Length: 87
Image (tube, rainbow, N blue to C red; front, side, top):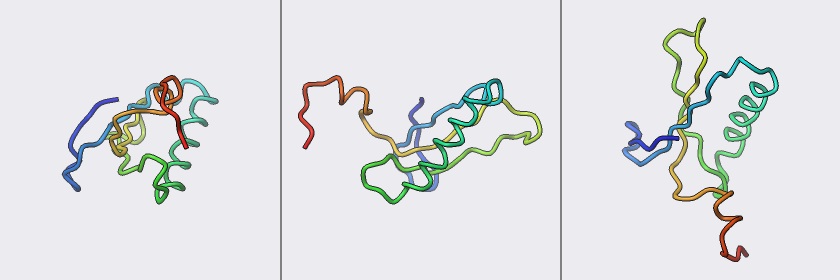
């Protein structure tokens, strides 16, 4: 995960690299599922917004995919492990 500034919105974003996406069929299915869920839940205030998918230069020969999502300062794993009480 990397932080960047989204050119279209000038807002801080996170860029997630999905590596070796075709090496394992199950992992590939999970990545597609993640993208589809993010797209479907894009209007929810409780889910990180999917802003963009960076198109690979060579569509016939690529192994990594980059998705651009809304930047958040924490993630679910950190929140669950913290002492914060969620209502």
